Amino acid sequence: ALYQPPDITKPCYVRVNTLKLDVDSALHELGKQFKVQKDDMIPHLLVLPPHTDLHNHSLVLNGSIFVQGKASSMVAAVLDPKPGWEVLDACSAPGNKTVHLAALMKGKGKIIACELNKDRAKRLEDTVRLSGAANIEVLHGDFLNIDPKGPFSKVGNIIYCSLTMRDPSTWHIMCSYLRANTLPQVSAILLDPSCSGSGTAAQRLDHLLPSRTTDFVDTERLNKLAAFQKKALAHALSFPAVKRIVYSTCSVNQIENEDVVNSVLPLATSNGFQLATPFPQWQRRGLPVFEGSEHLLRTDPVEDKEGFFIALFVKRGSEKNSEE
Ligand code: SAM
Image (cartoon, rainbow, N blue to C red; front, side, top):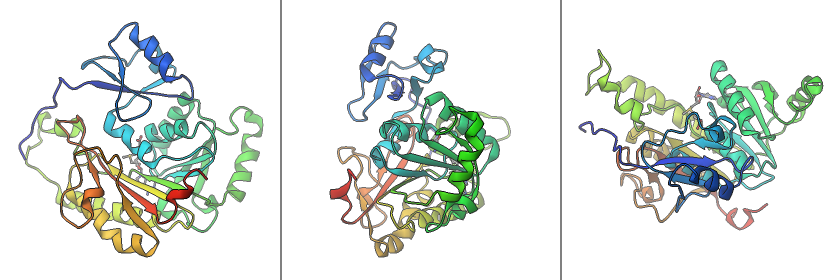
């Protein structure tokens, strides 16, 4: 497809971090400087005029609001974790969705934020600190090594634990305790794995960089990414107590999206999961490449500013008990 430049008339979005500030106060504060309103679909998301630059705004610097696009903000909202749940964010750095989960859970329950890359795990820690969330453990390790039926201890180190940071002197004791005792009673998994990023503006502007060609598609890289994405999604589907799984990418490629979901459907069905329809009022659905793809959600890289893909798996019979 021909490159289309991002539509600069599209609005900007910020997500209110309700752990630190309520939506009305954010509206009031931002309303002093900007025309601002609530998004009609995503709770806690505010819409501002195009080009609004908030990067140095005090509410951003103190973690009261996060500059986060609408499509990206849909992901944790679709998982819809309840306060008190144990949630696994499988591939979590830099942590925008992790701290969104914490806000949705009102800081109650536990989030295990897994990240393979050490430097990115540090960025994740910074995001968690900024958010003020007190229920997140950062686990530096490979999601694929988490035994769905065993303790997390074999995976890697819990390198940051906001539950205990208030008293650094007991931090190491608490983390040893967690390593030994944390059992995966995980109710929900957010899986936002490494992807090509082909739905993001930065990727779409790649061709403007010197020595890149516009029509270059790295098939080998896409195949490798898709293989990992399938493995990771199949792994998420094998956690016994999990009721909800969200799979998301910021890619527009079928091979990373519909094809990944389609490939795990037999496993999903035999493990008691079915596809559910996130935001049924949203028009753009999955590409019609298999029966059931209408459940999937896509956003358009130009019309919606970012090209995201979201699939929601729900354990059959768990819908009625979603408050537990
Ligand atoms: N969800 C994040 C957010 O919204 O801020 C973005 C996640 S990014 C798309 C994917 C992340 O997964 C990268 O930071 C990458 O290092 C990490 N990752 C890749 N393979 C992983 C694995 N096997 N286990 C855990 N994390 C992994």
